[in-house]
Length: 97
View 1 (cartoon, rainbow, N blue to C red):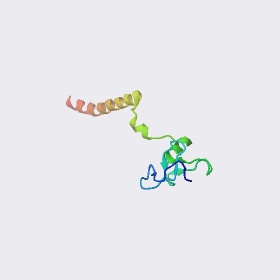
View 2: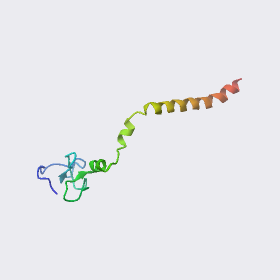
View 3: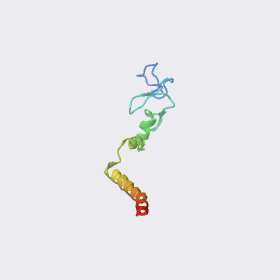
View 4: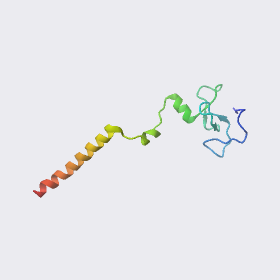
């Protein structure tokens, strides 16, 4: 289905060499037929894959790598580093005496 408001020379947001055949209902960006999903049936406006995944409740894992560990994660890492140092240092120190 072609969107009548879209210009004929519009390109797909993901595949730059493909002509867009429709727009995502949520983000309103143009996409080719391979990028659009008719999640609510053929009579409803399509969604792009990222918007369809978000609408279905799938959480993005992209932001997890950018977020910090938080206080509990840093504390756990600190305790683990201290324990590893102690495990390595005790035999060395006992051999010196």
